[in-house]
Length: 321
Image 1 (cartoon, rainbow, N blue to C red):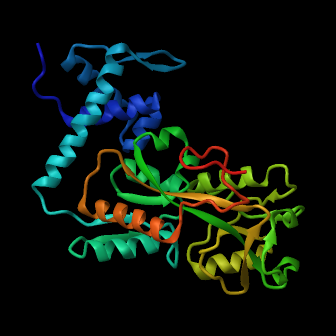
Image 2: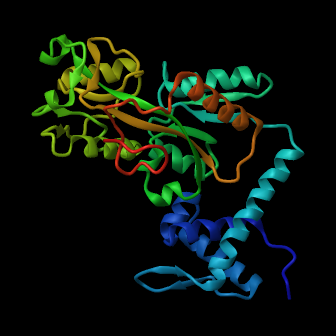
């Protein structure tokens, strides 16, 4: 018998488990107990009269029925969101800008607010796409920006993304640092330096991974974990205290007691993407996507300059040298 009523919550749990192939991780992503997720999957299997997973002590695999259900379940959940959006006034859209201050995401948000003045686009500052991606998957955040191709595949699976900008990288230096007198800093000039790139911060794993790839083979050392500083003044204080240069983007906010210098030879680029939940619909999201596309076209944000370098794992756009 064909089931007529399937609880969307059961489908949501199934999709998370199918994407992670790990019930404990999937439960954590949904912020439910692992036992509750297992119970929901069993209920769904009973409702459909089908076995969806093969579970052993070592691994979890989708059965043929599970593989058949996955795209159908995603479409059903997307339809539920679309239905809810069509008959309710749009709620505020929660947009993570990573940090408070001038930035590419802030520029996109400001343009989107001009395009959709009737939408409430609320800024948030989650300090790292790894953390923000989990918040988006759990429904506590709607949109974020960052190096999406550097996310763990399980975190990236439930997200849609669009490229926004190839951001040139820079280095923050304490005033008085030998390299601070230069207008630009060649990458090779950082050889022997210990550079901070968020190591030890679980919110910014994608950024630390980008830095590890950039530093590899250049004699640039990764700075050990430092206290996670919240706010401009605290960040500046900790930076000056440790004396370590900090990897940043050219648009990163200016810090008291520090200077910011673009990196060159080659110019390293950080591929900034905008991400949201797959299937999510909202007029504010439409405005953000239109704003990002328009700004990229106007300002050449997605044109990689000659002699620049993109990460090896980039999955869209031209490769780097």
